[in-house]
Length: 230
Image (cartoon, rainbow, N blue to C red; front, side, top):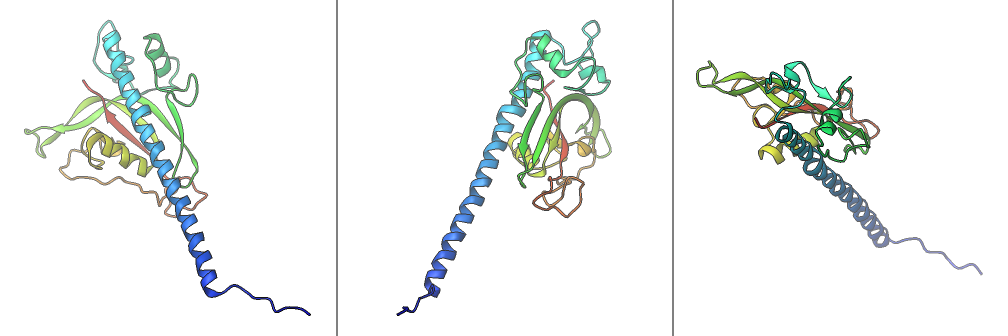
């Protein structure tokens, strides 16, 4: 004699669904926590590590990177363009290594200027560090808008996702504003208007800047400037 088999009750099904929801929520929160921890490491160890390396280079050789020792200009590369890890014939690594400066741990030996991380979709992105001398908006009471341009030495940070840019900006300036402060989006660094600017991209945009970001898409990236001390 075959006994009647029983299915799951609604209560049992509800309990299972709740448990699944809790597990999925925990996984999602765990991913966010892991990403935030990675971003904090990038900010504190990599970005601030390069800012310290820049200052150590100046303190040790009494020159900014790639300046002329016979006729110093106090401008990175004498205002002749950025110095990066791939700038030939003399790379950023060469300048630092020849001065005996310890660089932050980057992607690999000889690629200390690069750092690989995962964006909010879990796809790989790469930060690249350069240094340059660029026009920078500064307070100037004599200017029509109250701001004028002055050449400043900056760390150029390429390959930054929008959420990482905001975190770095908050870490440096205490507020996320792409126009003002020591940390700016590249396109707003020389803006002399009195208006604040929001960061030009968000994590809803893909690498090609389309507003169709999907899980398999790399998130849009930006280039930022971090003002170096004089």
